[in-house]
Image 1: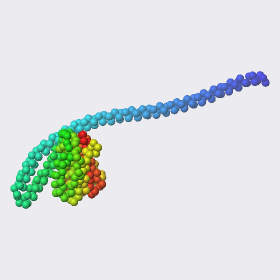
Image 2: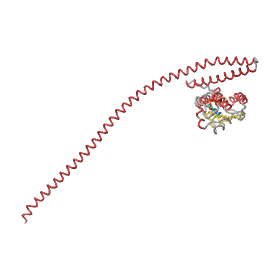
Image 3: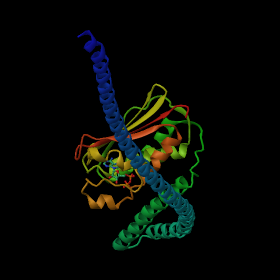
Image 4: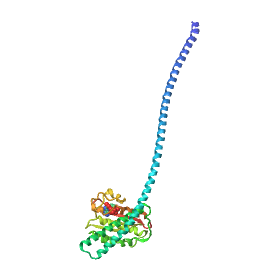
Length: 313
Ligand code: ADP
């Protein structure tokens, strides 16, 4: 019995060991083959990505070349546009200059004829000629200002001025205009003085524009009121009217050049202007480092236009 154990035990152990070896070899082989498979799959995915990246790169390159071509085209058209713009400005100032002189003589001769006591009809016709030449004159000076603004040549000639004097100078003319149209024009008591550094002619142009607009857009029987006051270091002018008002969506747009309020239905009033006055006023006030604006409770409810300029602009 002992003999059998001595002989068989090592044989049995040998067989068990070789069995374990075979099993471990087989599982090892299976594991390594599944690892290989996974690696192959990830290699495949990486390759796919690399192909996609290469394609994207070539597309990017193509697009950037297209962009380069487009931007050089754009630069060329910008150059052309700048040239055309300069031509337009030159043409505008030439036309304006050439029209101004004959216009002045038409106006002068018409006024002379009015003084010669013509018949009633003729006097009406002559007055029409005078008012039409005035309208054209205003358009021409607005266009001149516009051309200067666009060419960056609207220069302010600033001196020490008293803004109360500026207002006092223009109020009589405005009162006559208001009277003619049946609008009641009032001026709140002036502050003592409003000394400031500014362009007298240009600032009075702004105030006149706001007052004349207020009278134009206010029906007979209603009111326009002017208030001047100092607020801290600012000089403020408020022109309040009880006229046709402005739609809330347009209180900013009316300061753009050639913009006339679309919600206002009065065609006749629209034809009396070109939508330039407020854009020019904006430029003048900007040159004085100030601000200009309008507010209105709505159509038919009047409006208030204002500007503020620092006393030492
Ligand atoms: P214009 O009066 O010659 O059309 P403006 O630039 O002075 O040009 O004004 C632009 C527009 O703003 C006017 O056409 C009008 O629609 C609107 N507007 C200006 N002032 C008033 C006002 N006091 N009340 C109502 N609308 C106004």
